[in-house]
Length: 164
Image (cartoon, rainbow, N blue to C red; front, side, top):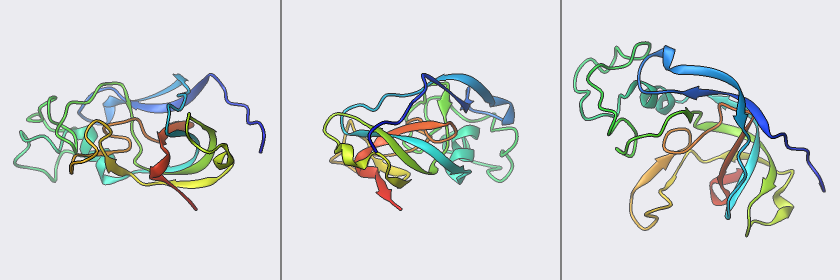
């Protein structure tokens, strides 16, 4: 596969903050990401709703949420703290494209990635070691600490996508 046309903008759903379903917005003017070194750009074929997507949106991971954890899916948690409402315990930047479970086709590669991967059908491994601390157990989740697959395109680390 020699050439794939990639648009400048895409449609997707973004999370605008921790909370209820009202924190999800459909937008059709999101910038298509460009893969950095060691990354691939995936044209998303499908993305499922993972419990991490819901838990991140509602702030369920926050240390401030200690009771009623079975009741926040539609409205979020009033006791959630913006500073630790993610899997990693670090604050998110918003808007965030969620979507942890993704499959699709690699349409572009960053520096250092074999261009022979373009056209490859892949599954995304949702959890990976944090790039700023890869020697520890510090994990991030696709669609939580980095943008995910609730859009037409997603970028991700090459080593975290597997042929399907």
